[in-house]
Length: 427
Image (tube, rainbow, N blue to C red):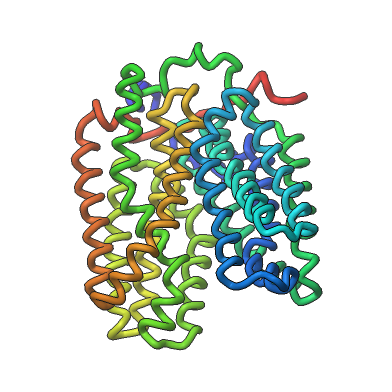
């Protein structure tokens, strides 16, 4: 039903929207705690060097790299697993799996076994992400879903800000404490999620033939919408993989600037996400997903082009970071929100898994493509090419969003409704 079918209601305030997150508060606590417990991974390479003296640098790189392979497999396989195991239980198993695997890693010396266990660690770690997004999509009303996704991102970023600090303290005390820190944190997260009251949707997915209200069409159209949207947003994942993977190399090696400038980029990004994302997404709740995504694309395009001009004026790196961070805070809640809206219930975990796998693929491919370009073409041209790729994504999204048969329909002026509760929530 469109917004016109409802009587006029005042837009809920920020406090009301935060209170509306009550159905997923257990999930948010789980995400924040588990990400805070990611203390082994940031120091995994140096941990192996310190604890496994026979390993060379190349071998350590190989072992660490298998984590990403496991994460990619988890994104693709999550839908098939969720068809056999209840979603919340599957996420609990993933969290407990991380705890168990890292403890086995702590006592393993065999090279190939370490590689296999690291891949399994990545699998269990990533398995939680599509399930978390799916649980949000199931329990939160459409008009609150984008705000809820921004809250999940806040929990993720809060944990990822705490985790490396704890990792540094534990490593200083003794590298052998890192696996125990991760295991204890993840086991506690599994216990919290196991006891959380989170809606998981109907037992029989066959009864759910359509996606959320406002979406129409048969299975073929649902598939077309999802894959078209995934293709149109590929530039976003490629571009936003660059700050975390190449920013320090770009600033310190290519530009020859002090390391403090690289740290400042990460600090500006983290500060803005932690302090502004919730308020920004609250302010934009009245905008359609299409409008929000296009605004985010514009910010991303301008911000990444500006990164190249930081070669001439270093302070522009921080301005650029602020601009593309605005884009990040907009597009990353909107994308899972749109996927939720165009996906039938029976395919939600699968599509969220493919979405997270798509992101991880960008993390793998972006530095492999960008660093040779940076060396051959220089900063301005290379970052301008990134902006050009984003501009193509912007134009593609504009084109497909003008077609309801490809994009789907959406309510542009949502009104507040109570969050659903599930008859399947634990007592």
